[in-house]
Image (tube, rainbow, N blue to C red; front, side, top):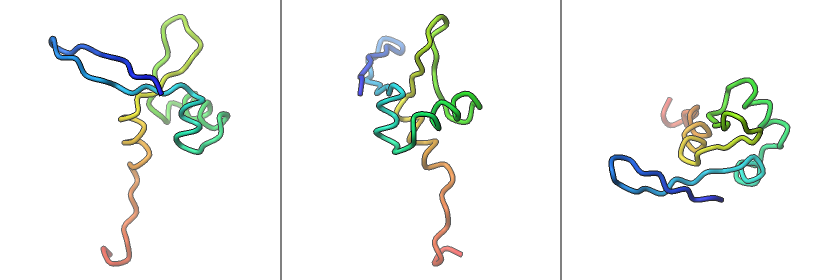
Amino acid sequence: MKKITISHNGEDSKTVVFTVDELVEYSGYKKSYIYKLAHQRKIPHYKPPFGRKLFFKKDEVDSWLTANRQLMVSEL
């Protein structure tokens, strides 16, 4: 995982950014499925203007992975 320092209003914060290969390892999804989701714009991702690589912010991936929580039987 890569840590990139981003400055917001003079404050430094650490943002974890995944490459496709790192996201495959983190999520367990196949590489081809990650590319398919990105192509269909179903997963939040970033692509530099003239680059070919995709990047994914860990916090956004975590939110995306946990977006469709299913209710437990006791919650019905």
